[in-house]
Image (cartoon, rainbow, N blue to C red):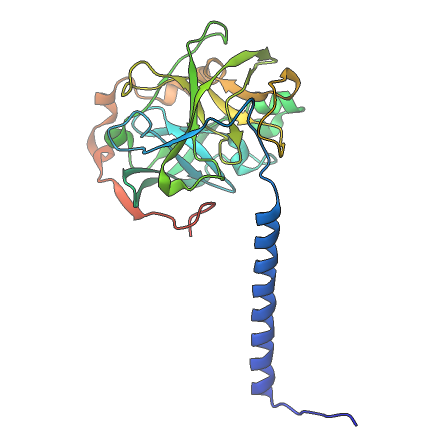
Length: 295
């Protein structure tokens, strides 16, 4: 015997709504299980010695923040009103010129983002590159902020020079394997290992989200960061601890390749940048409760 149940149109719509909701929930659970069981792919040489530090408003790491675009990346203030980040966060097929994104950092306290909209005003034209190295060498984008956060949190100093005989280096950013609300993640000791076709080979920790991280030196605990390069890319490996190999080195774009293109946009001195509308009140937004994207 076959039991037949007749439903009116309202009941059918209600049943369909419940069924699709159940399918969406099952899909989310499945994705969560896959993510939880999958190893994080990254390139960390030797051993993972990264530390987490609070990016407080008076600290030297305050100019480093997150860029929300097609993906999440790190970026950093290079003067009061401009941020340097990677172009590949916007994709690699079309020019991102004129695109608007959000730049923000946890600098006011541990529960608020200080942020501003920004527009892409210059890039390395990565979309025109014909091979991997050329793309990485062109992997940078300059944002102009609507609100000049550098008047509040400061900015880094860009240093042009060769990769040889550099002081002890660090890198810092917001990788996806750490909770952003806990602070900024720092690789306290890393090195350059030479150059290749305009790229700097390095062993600074690089995970998803570290693209755009500054590679810098620091003299004194609270001095302005001296930035030599911006981290572009790394090979993906499940194992965090293995010996450095030049064939799989992380690659960074040096400031010497970027500065000639962006110098005309930068302010000569802080006093020139901090005038008029640029002294607009800093906007504060509640911190994002999830680790990978603003919610």
